Image (cartoon, rainbow, N blue to C red):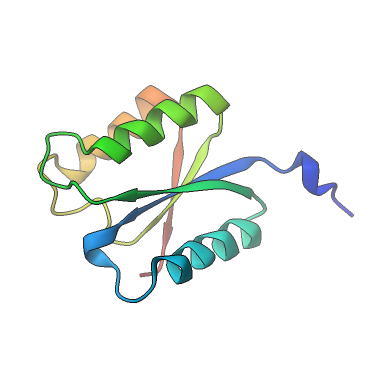
Length: 107
């Protein structure tokens, strides 16, 4: 049996404009996804400002990923698309600034 305290951390990222239903239900989906993938979920960042060049919560997540040295983030499919910054640039920021792997969740 694996000691749960030794599992790596994963963070989550949700765009509030793309989810239907209760935010807590989506948070629970991210927790479930992280646990199934063998991670402990640290927190989920909720983005409401998708019009800025680099959304505020996205940058907060990068800072937290760097601080905690976590290397994984769970993002529902499509949650990095349609913002002011192209998805490929956001993925590059996660990779180069935080050395993070994105785990895409089914939406």
